[in-house]
Image 1 (cartoon, one colour):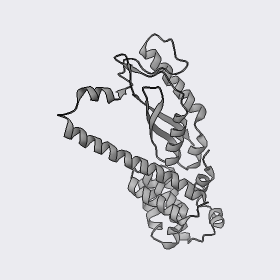
Image 2: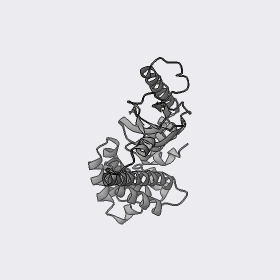
Image 3: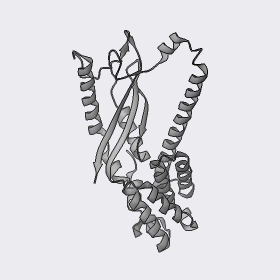
Image 4: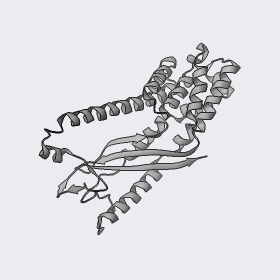
Length: 264
């Protein structure tokens, strides 16, 4: 399970106790700037949050606070500024001790940022390759390798416990109910409560059910890397399924779902 203490510190970042624990003194001005940044971050007003944290980060005393860099990284991550998020997470790791919880949380943020950056590069590369080779693609190979969308598959994957249905619609409905129940039972809501963002939380998850029935290529998009990491962990625990078929042959099937909940 995640070291939620790091996020708990972020949640209480602007209390005097954090400075006592990290033995860092900070001016009232910068404490106020960081406090305002966190307040707007928790309300999902990320542009305003970024404005305040960037003002604070101009001061050398703030640049040496790992939790400040972590906050900056989380704001950039929420804004989808992944390169800037990566820099801030690296900074948080550099100024913290290896055993610090801030370093652990920043490492997750860095890993998620790098994964998403690399995924974008792969998508762009594949797009360019498709455009360059669109007139010379081997149709048979293309059909063999392609992934089929869940909505149009001839026979959808069958989730354990959903066997014996009479239609694709029934299989889809059963699978959705089973996956929703799995997520509800296994998602650690403590993560969402600890990161400090309040209100409606939406995590978009996408994955493939392989021709062997395994869950592969999981992708998650959320406002915070810890939310993405938790969503991926939960989806990784889905059971093996009967694979979907197209023209009688097992194929990879892409499936997406939102994970939505409220944090007060």
